[in-house]
Image (cartoon, rainbow, N blue to C red; front, top):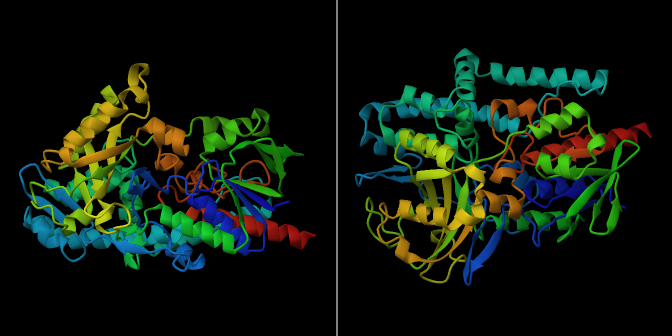
Amino acid sequence: MPDVIVIGGGHNGLVAAAYLAAAGLKVTVLERRAQVGGAAATEEFHPGFRNSVAAYAVSLLSPTIIRDLDLHRHGLKLVERPLSNFLPLPDGRYLKVAPGRTRAEVAKFSARDAERLDAYEARLERLTDVLRALALKTPPNVATGQGLAAGLASLLDTAKVANRLRSLGLEGQRDLIELFTRSAGDVLDQWFESDPIKAILGFDGIVGTYASPYAAGTGYVLMHHCWGEVNGRRGAWGHAIGGMGAITQAMARACAARGVEIRLGSPVSEILVENGRAAGVVTGSERIAARAVVSNLHPKLTFEQLLPSDALPADFRARIGSYRSGSGSFRMNLALSELPSFAAAPGRAPAEHHGSGIVIAPSLAYMERAWMDARLSGWSAKPIVEMLIPSTLDDSLAPPGRHVASLFCQHVAPNLPDGRSWDDKRDTVADLMIETVEPYAPGFKASIIARQILSPLDLERDFRLVGGDIFHGRLSLDQLYSARPVLGHADYRSPIPGLYMCGASTHPGGGVTGAPGLNAAREMIRDFRARRWRR
């Protein structure tokens, strides 16, 4: 009998399994799909063309996890983008963003903005240092009902966080509150006057978020996307050689080296509860007993589909019922006969901008209109598109001379109005996304050999991303930190003893970070050790 069953072999589930096994526990991972990785997987979508199917870029993956799981020894290789971002503009100009180069690029549009850029980045870095430190800490819990010791521990945790915030000083604390509560657009309008720099910075505020850049809380989303690093360079974005699946395959090898059993094609249909405790799961016709269960699934799937309705407190179940998911994302993978030639930077020979995040969204106003369109009609008339061409950094993904592109597109409604189905509109919207890129890169449409399309409905069906939400729930103030996913259960423990949570619906939230898996494993190990000591 395993000590722990992990439901879901996505990256957070694998991280949790590896840490639990390292602590001497016997662990079994049950994965519904035919390969591990969840949304962080690499697949062949057309003969000879492979790509990261859903998740598509690396930055937020914790270096602590890379080191602890020895992922480089297990085959992981990360390379940094030659540029962070490339923003082509309708008038033929462009903005390139890269360490040490952004200021000169911004000066092409505004000398004032170029002068202010260093101060903005310094303030943002001070704040992201705090987020980076808190990402691998369990949030202070509220009203756990676990007695005096738990209450004192929560107070101690709160004091530690307060000390961390005090280190920012008064000015830094004001900046933190401003970014947590205000919109990305309002903050950026306060700092800058030119559209290009506000657009490229503001894009981070709406990635995976079904909202206008002027919606309250998008300032935090902007920060959330800035605390990562690649190969020691903070704030950088990169690519995993072999695609995002290379990350989770390395994690699976780390698990195997620690004795973890990984079972593919094993969907869990029920979490067993005996005498008020999680006691195992049902997969297929098999009942597997365990001392504890940890779910890497979206909380609606865990608590609404895998448990009997009377197993949970009524208020907790109601809160899960109102937990908000839906990111407005539409994913495409394209097989290309050649690299795009941009009107702003002509040429099909590989260049630095081809290896960057290429953003089609020239202003915050453009992004706001895209969201408003989607709210009214189901998708944006002029959508936001981020394109990556990872084959420029990794020739294992496409045949010689050919390329693959990832398109991350917004905004689309998670659920179409008037009862329409995404199955009927998938190709229409995919055509629109390609037509959106075409004026910026004439001939792009003709270069497409094949395409893979993932609407919000496809993301939910294929990867169990409820509402197509890549973060397992919105990164809004009511669903962050000690309130993620529900106030009183931010410590990765569910209301049912022995049942834990380790997915992106827990702190610190979405993205390929691994942090929820590490944090959940730490709390589980503490519980196991406490029980041994009592015995």
